[in-house]
Image (cartoon, rainbow, N blue to C red; front, side, top):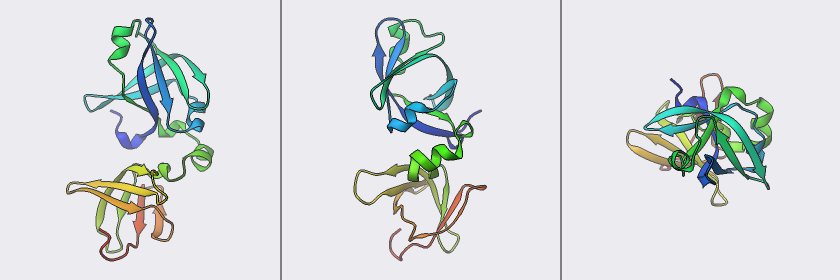
Length: 171
């Protein structure tokens, strides 16, 4: 079974398009439209389900239409409206992450504070303000941690861990 940490979010399905089972979609960044994959993954009932891409048509920088295999009408297609679109991280190259993702690459990484205190897993990167934030989730809730190299001590890509030295009182 595929888990969220194995996936990378590239966009969102907007709504069904037409009557032949197509869906309109938006990519989070224009670069994400160029990802080559045979499958998009959608989260359905807390399970990530692969959908075989039959055809995809791109419009502008970050919009398009996708037709999945075995979805033949707008009734079936409309079930997937407003779903996030994921691809397998293993299908993405290092160049992809370096060129287009920035801090998004670290979604799914676990964050440890200087005392080896486990703060949780990065579930989102908030870029809505001038200060980019990691949204880190654990059993106690969410933490908003500035995504800055000033606080990062070490990154272990093999174990998907970020070690940080955070100012006292931030958490």
